[in-house]
Image 1 (cartoon, rainbow over the protein chains, first blue to last red):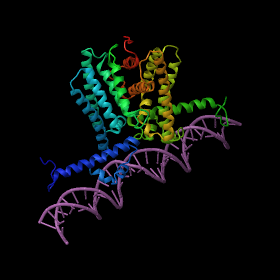
Image 2: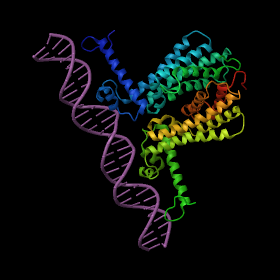
Image 3: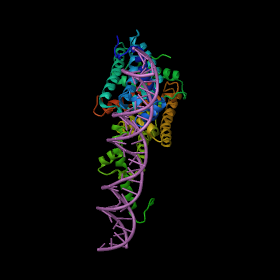
Image 4: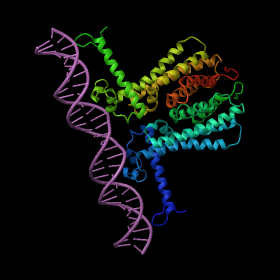
Length: 211
Length: 211
DNA sequence: TAAAATTGCTACTACTCAGTAAAAGTAGAA
DNA sequence: TTCTACTTTTACTGAGTAGTAGCAATTTTA
């Protein structure tokens, strides 16, 4: 089982600690990138937040770009995981869509900084990383589109083009990350509830709407 | 009528030429900021596109930040103007909303680079400029909200909270700037049409939907 | 054609910051 | 305590770029 074993024992714990340090670096970096933007944030500032120095960061990440990539990747992967979990729940397309919107909206609010950095800083990714991120996004839209197509077949949803509808819906969800503000005018729960009812209105046939 | 008159005549034409140069600088800057991001774009690169030098730019704009501000301002102001024009057209709330969505969606597609720079680079604005931009955005959302409230009163729209609905709708419109791609899967017209029908479904009461 | 005004450019400064080499510090094993 | 491996820091380099001072070219005016 020992994967990255040094010359001496106690590898497992060491790996956990390394992983923890990487997580902490990522966390502070995402805060600063969220608040000031990627290019405007110096790694010295990230280091300062952690009470360490810049070379410390470089011993856990190969460069600034890798940090950005992991933040973006986290953002989209979290949403994708939640979507896949929700799709695994048995139910009609209507029921599934509601669960999807609820859970994805929640995860987006909880991980706002990762998601909005991902949405804003795509152009700062190096091309290869950008492609990988786009693939994940595409996977998200595709799965959502499949769900919508299923609902269209069963007559639950009245939509013309599932893949275009998927873009509007994933856009509506992404949009939350760009305007939601903790302690603002509306609570997270209100926003989530409103997102659900708005999305359902977008897809439901006339006369099918519930309270 | 001479407003900014130098010591000698021919002021009007001169002002037009100055305005034209400013517009051209802004145009190229918006292209590059859109493609590579604000911080990652050097003013030397903007100058190169125009076959001039950096000090040329500095004689028309006081600094890089002013350039960003004018791009963002253009983005939101264009949308706001179109919204106000559309609201001036007589008609029911339903008719007005359709016109609003159509025209705003069109202007967003036509001016994608201004709008998406504005959406992405808000954090790079200096605080005073950011406040002014936010005020314009707020004005947009408020006017949209008023229209929705009117439709709610007349029973045309079935929405719980006009200002939250306004955020979803303006988000849906903004979202276009972030994913639309000229010559992509869908034409501008298809996107505009789809935006209209999606928004109308979001607000119309059950049983009120048209083809 | 010469003086005056305007416009643009060359050449520079000052600074920030990503990334690194090498030394110092730390902890476990003998 | 001393050797060894690993971790973190000090101190630096080099590249890139915002912004400017002052000169050169051009145009305008008379």
